[in-house]
Image (cartoon, rainbow, N blue to C red; front, side, top):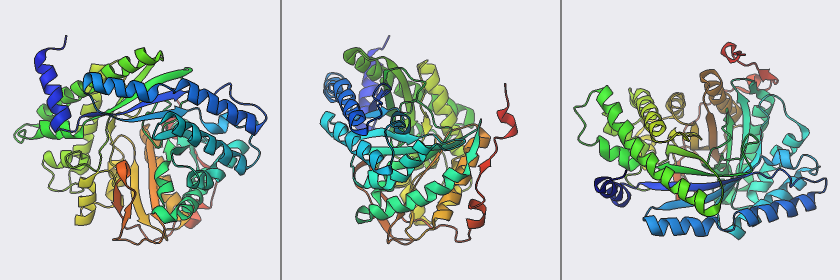
Length: 454
């Protein structure tokens, strides 16, 4: 039972500590929409999305009003489009047409992002997947709400280095085609290894083929709540600190479960998972960096940062699992640069660089996220950054991702501005030594020895 003290505490978290439900995401299967004609497939996709999601925005608003819980985003994820369009899309232009259909449907139902313009060439790449990947620059430059994600490897399959090399070129082209808006197209494009099927957060959300016909997934976030809990805890040892974070994460997760179950009941769609990911925003007090600094690190990036992040991430997961048997997605701590004012301050102060961020990704929820780099960074260097991050995920049996923005025309020390939730990012220095000969070897980095568990 929830008592009055818990109600008062939750209200305080919402009003003063930036606690919110970051997203209700409708995961929607498009299996059955496929035909051998691209126009007919587009019609089927548009009809299915607009029919199934017609009440998503209204339901979210009703729950917000009745429970006084902020629900920041309402979103949709769909079956990877490379699967749905494999029979009808014969050119990259066909995939652009489908992306525009997704964008039109997203605007019709009122969601801010729709994820699933995706492919999963983790081991090899099909012709359909190649066409979708090659269409990404045009698709993201001609749409507003569509997000793309590509899974390039896994612990079971290794890393598809041909696809890694291709994605370096695709990211460069996407940056160029959206150059008038500081290459914002790259902010809607993420590459993964070990991508989960039930992630509600953009830009990486897609509705995996292991999922049911439709599900409600909720992402809840409360960096400000964790930070507040740590204030005044200077004298706690590490075990006590873990317990404090676990208890706080438990309370945050219960809020997400409440919203997920209520949305599920009202929409008549099964509840999938609640993702407890501490996802920062540009708002003051809503920062992962500030949590790490509250643990005793003078500035995020200093020695001890990775250990502090590991403690935070693990404690958040433990608290979430105690609160619900349906914790999924990514669940942990995100460390995007552009969306976290504390991370931006650390970059500007010289305490945080890409190499340290990469080390932090070995223990955080995802990976190198929303990092702006000089626009003249080569495609091969971008592929090298991706390969390093994919290797961390593959070896450590965890999800890792890369969302970098080579801001066209911008140099180290300048700033890229994206607006809204995406925020702004300082252009970070990139190692100038070349990895081109390594990237052009091609083929696949084999799966690690510990992948063989059958």
